Length: 349
Image (cartoon, rainbow, N blue to C red; front, top):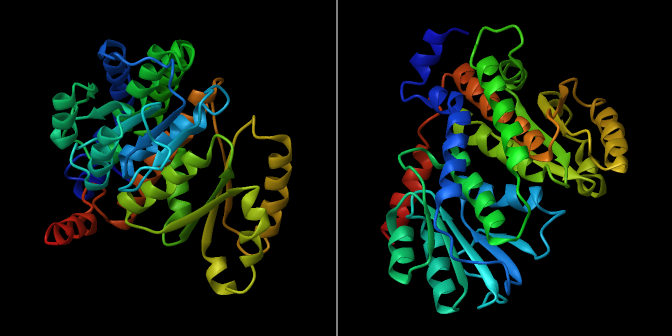
């Protein structure tokens, strides 16, 4: 795979967006540090983040990453309606990168009616307009990117906001390690012909196969979701997945009947050195059982010291893998034509 081949398939520059992700994270940290946040944790009994797609995955990651530290429940809401419990003691985070997400703005208006505490993060649009009209706390991030390529802008300002509001302790050291790791991986993964280019190797394994992604339910469920979403949007290919231990109680039984199809599935186990001890044992056993049905089983381990670095090591690897898979498929990773068509049809109703 050469740079010329990449440019031919990727004329709009997804390669550059992924390669420059560490810089985006640096900018996002600066935005989160300087944004005006008037809200405080005192009196807030639960947090609900409203968002869809690339804007919602930031909420999933925050929920997973902070599960051991947050003292209030954290829910990610992907619906038009808000949960019934939302009220004046709820922090509602409105996350819409474009600012024009139909479902999210509907929930935003409902949060206003219920007098919830509101924090918005967006590049503009209706979300920004509503926030300014109500004088809600508002974080403005640079626009113009596909939402899935703006994860740094969607995640890190909110992490800093939760710190500044008093929900969690400072993550400065973990953020510093994460950026340093991302910069090393960017230089390595951006070389398509490099001998140590792991995401390209994984993409070659997945080419022309149905992807299956398994991970622990603790901390890495959101990484699992991100991998499958990126395979779909960037590479225009299907993948499904599940988390352990839950899949050991149902999905594992399904590995039996579709023998020909299973032989052509590529299974990835996303693993972390701090997975629960029993989860690690379950993964070892499950991997062996699935290997009886397909020879295409690969373990992918996180890297780094802090949990934040380890999470983003796997996220970034998945982003690059899905990009290289798009190139191997001859698919432009940037457009999402069927989603655009769906939005156009919805607008007619």
